[in-house]
Image (cartoon, rainbow over the protein chains, first blue to last red):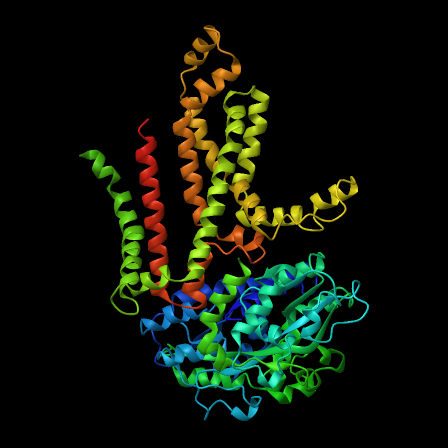
Length: 370
Length: 268
């Protein structure tokens, strides 16, 4: 979250290449695109009157390859506008640095909705133009003034099946080391962990927000000795489970899917009480390519078939509900927003995060690091 | 005059690439989001900041002492050992020095983790039953940092040992001092400047460590560099980030000046 999830895509590419899942050519292509996009990004400072290219900044690696294949190539064909994917990572601070000068070099960013909102309210993002972007192609409740949801992922329980005879079925099970002995791993940057702690403590999903931080932190403080490591990135979370350092972890669904596939189910996952969240597209204020062209790009990514390509390459759930049905049956289990999976999960409240994330994370870090 | 002229490009370069941005950071610390000292007030009143500073100092002091103490005999072997020993030691110092910090850190991770090499060996030898937790805690951070910083302690020590007047040692032996006494009363005091220089270099370096604590600390060992990163990129509050940086700079700078004045390092 706050960039960390998206940044994880950078590493997926290299790992897929290593594990032979993609061939050398597309690996080199991916790297080339990364290098090329960044180099061109440097030269794009002058605003163009008629848009020929736009820079979309995401978190690098596999996301560059995947987004270009899913969205970029066809957009260029339709409009003549080239989309350059720059993997340098649009953290909230980096977007702020771009936009504050008034003449950004970036056009679009792959950001957390609450970051987009926070920046938008500071006048640093263009409001989404809902006459171009179709809100009918978004899931209910996942649109914001400055951010349109673009894909979904979830914080889910992944566990070592060789250690547990019965699978965990709730956050209460995750926090119960008597019923499920063994070390745990949780997310270092807090997101989703407060929700998990409160659910385990008996708070009903519909009463989660506003989060009772005192109660959540008390639960986490009492539990933290069972945590073998707080992971900061997806690759780390994966290796903690693979190496047996921990036997249960709250990790991103994209990583849980890889673990499940790579270990033939020895490390399994459950959607039960997963904390689901979208990534989103945002447009930087005064973007060089113009707001209209940027909105058109966002609209073009709403095509369900294009979103299925992204799911197949990264495991990100499609933002357009019409895409769910297009996913092959054997892959449907891995789609975070598949109706059957979605019903078991709880959506993250972006408004709460926009308001409270900074203070909450400070307190959380204080607790886990003491 | 010509000396000043020759060094001028360097001064200019440092001025533009270092002093100007530094001035910018200092300025931001008292102007963002509005003029005043409220950023410093907030930083000093934040318990998280204090716990992070405290951990950073604790780990860095520990690392400094360990790295310097371990580097000392290593440097002696390197400077005063026989030729074959010298070569082996030199390789042991240089090769890790050339490797990237990332690969060294990952190396430690696979060495020390629960199913890592060390635990596997110890179990196979029957020395332990349960895996020892040697990484993803402060211990792992310290091991990784000490390993990285030992070469930085070796160089100042080596220069002190090389510049030593051998005749003093021989004279001491000649009038009957034991090897032990020569070492503690002659050799060590004569390298004191090198010891302090090594310790200072290691300490200053260690304060800014980011990768090693992040990877080997298991998410728990948040150090000051990571906290500053957090305030720049994750939860942007540049005024606070600038104030934090300025405070660390002043604290470390003040500490260094005091130590240098007290011990006279650099005057030799």
